[in-house]
Length: 119
Image 1 (tube, one colour):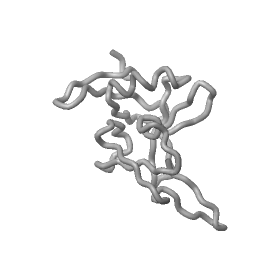
Image 2 (cartoon, rainbow, N blue to C red):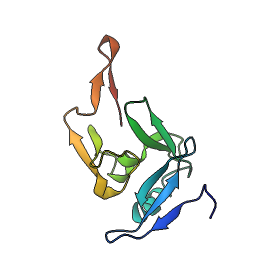
Image 3 (cartoon, helix red, strand yellow):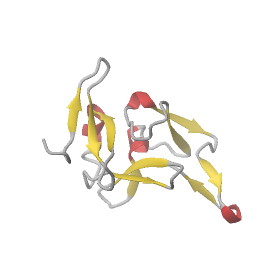
Image 4 (cartoon, one colour):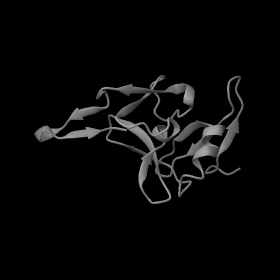
């Protein structure tokens, strides 16, 4: 396998794999089962690391070219909820590391009263 390909690892819980990020030397970690569910939805196998220096997340494109947060897709694309990473690592997209937060936890006011969502 070359350095840009996915690799699979088995743990006691669920098999997981790493996915290279196109704009970084980092890799995302995801359960194999979830990866296989996402592939038909995504128009590309290219995943990107996005963020503003404070908040980091992994994104990809759907078939209609819409950019989406991979963690949100794994959790069923919940409306008005923020994704939280239990171990603090936003590159760990294993379902056991993801949880939802409701009530504006992932939205903060920016200049001039505008709101911005982080995930």
